[in-house]
Amino acid sequence: MQQVAKEGRFRAKIYQYRPDLSGSSEATGLWMSCLLLKEQGPLGWTDIKDGVYCAEGTVWFIKANGDKREDVIENLRLATGWDGTMEQLLGETETPWVPLDVEITVKKEVYKEQERYKIAFVNAITEGPGAVPVGKTTAEKLKERFNRKNEEAPW
Figure (cartoon, rainbow, N blue to C red):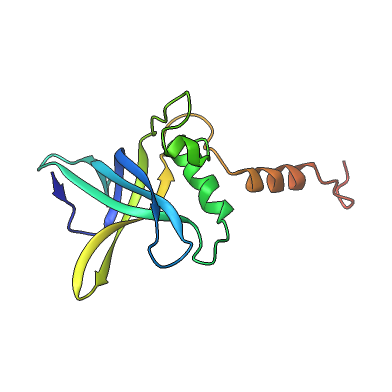
């Protein structure tokens, strides 16, 4: 399997993962390696047919200072089907985590003068029939706004 060597948006299957610790700070994340299934182009999504490609990267959900990034955890939960616990990432739950297919964004990084293409964002696949999941905070804001009484409305 070859590492992808370009930026882009891809539909992907997470096939390997592990919690990841920064060696020099409190930062903690989810490292994943994904098999690329489709690529987004100007005319939509097309199957990847010219080889087997993967992308990898870490999505950091605890900052270097130790603060949790709740928005990142919620997005990963919704996108991948993860229950949001470290125990599930470590395989310590009764029900093993079977990650959902995801959409990933791959970006170029330069580290020690070496170009690498890494997963920058992970999102839920949003095409198809049905509701697209939103995070708890967004859901609460939507409900609050929808249920707010409008004093100026005539009805």
